[in-house]
Amino acid sequence: MTLLEAIEARHSVRKYTDEPIPEDVLTTLRNKVREINKEAGLHVQLVTDEPKAFNGFKSTSGVFSYGAFSGVKNYFIMAGKKGEDLDEKVGYYGEQLVLLAQTLGLNTCWVGLSYSKIPGTYELAEDEKIVCYISLGYGQTQGKAHRSKSAKEISNASDLTPKWFNQGIEAALLAPTAVNQQRFFIEYLGFKDYDRVPSVTARSLFSMVGYSKIDLGIVKYHFELGAGKDNFEWL
Image 1 (tube, rainbow, N blue to C red):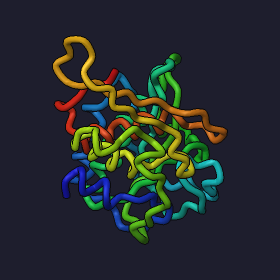
Image 2: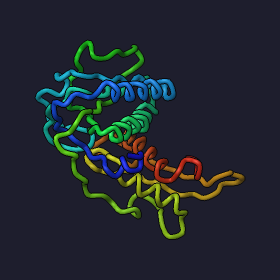
Image 3: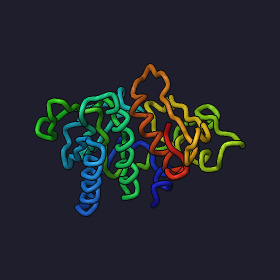
């Protein structure tokens, strides 16, 4: 499964089976975590075989959807150094883990508040904080798609914008966002001065739900996969 195929196939899953994750799959995920932490300066941590964090919780405050969690024994702790860009980085790099997990046959769910921080399962420096969790495992189902906005509602995509831009928007529309709010806007700006490639801007919109910066990071990663990073630059 390619990452673009993973975008199509991946849906939030909150109920998991007892099937253990093979060690070779965990090794692949741990290697990706190390890569992300080095590149982004985050402190992502993978916790396995730990059933207490989601025990008895419902995702009424979850990042992307509602419903009870069950069978969660594996999860990513998305943490990093405090700063204005932390939430967006967590979204951008966390979605890399989510889609990688999908290509490996696993299921996931972004979770905002419906978890317990179990002592001994994570480490934090004084200037770091936990932003959210991502549940991980083999789902009882593959989840289901949710209603989506149109391309015109979240971008200036049209018959006049490049094909790659429109493909990026299609991928962005499949990005998970808090309670499916899709509060973002992506705009094609064309060439600026002596730019080598066209410019694109993406911004989060006001949300009563919150999590809009995490959403923006996820959306930008999806857009890059659909559009091709070499075709544009973020303004």
